[in-house]
Image (cartoon, rainbow, N blue to C red):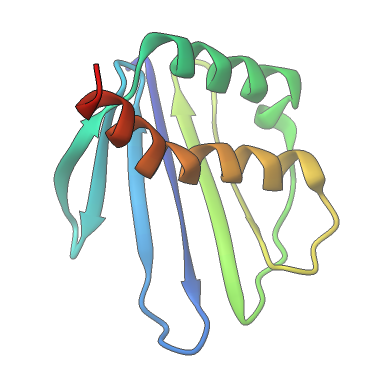
Length: 117
């Protein structure tokens, strides 16, 4: 297994969970009721940037378990390690929040770019 990044959130007013999985080959899928539906593929450049961010923040050794009313999560699994972090809006950790923004940004940005090649 090269890489599997699961990310999303749960809780809040509606308590409807949102989960996506991004694979090392760039395939992005939405997870609903345990079923994956491919959304689109992410470009190599974007994948390199995401992998670089993960390595630079030493994700393997991060320990964040701070759920709240709205809880965000990132779970990463690869050949070297498996780790998950959870946080809320008031958690003080900009690097993990920025990684999450990058991941959620590819949901629309990459789809737009794929349509406009």
